[in-house]
Amino acid sequence: GESVGLHLPTLSVQEGDNSIINCAYSNSASDYFIWYKQESGKGPQFIIDIRSNMDKRQGQRVTVLLNKTVKHLSLQIAATQPGDSAVYFCAEGGAQKLVFGQGTRLTINP
Amino acid sequence: DAGITQSPRYKITETGRQVTLMCHQTWSHSYMFWYRQDLGHGLRLIYYSAAADITDKGEVPDGYVVSRSKTENFPLTLESATRSQTSVYFCASSRGASYNSPLHFGNGTRLTVT
Image 1 (cartoon, each protein chain N blue to C red):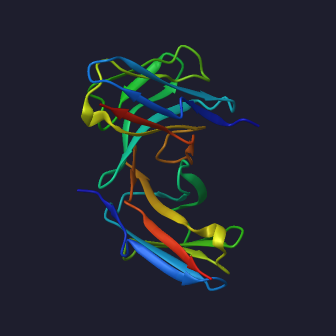
Image 2 (spheres, rainbow over the protein chains, first blue to last red):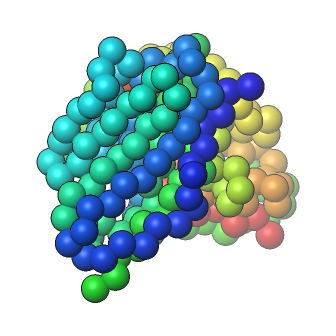
């Protein structure tokens, strides 16, 4: 069945370094992908999305890469800051359904 | 710009009681959703609505009732609360269907059923 998973449940990076959060998906028919950020005590916050006709999309300090060949999605955060500490979810949309991953916790070391 | 607001923020209720969680959005989004978030399960869809007076079941609808008489409001009712319904509930809205439009979430209601 379809599933969205994460390679690492936790990621720890130094402040100022770049962060890369990975996500694998299994439904090759999915054509819409989203990254969310969830801070403690808050709801998920939309970060960036990408459609299957694109390989890369950039936002402010964030880049999403989509590799349809290996069904892999990644979120890159440039110059990671303390405010980036949160749980990051990927989600895939397709077949009239949105599936969320379990999340990766990103912690920032000073 | 208030966005999407949920109330109450925290709720404790007893098994068997009816409880209603409120959700209000100011964007005039067509779609609204209710999710529950539990450790080990992530976000699971309870119910959604494509427009006023149109609602559909999601992945885990049993024990829940929704209504949408106005575009901006989407209350979720637990008819007879059970301990398994202890969770954090998130309301969300979007311009289009969830599988091709970004969802915008509220800050959640933490519900404890004793």
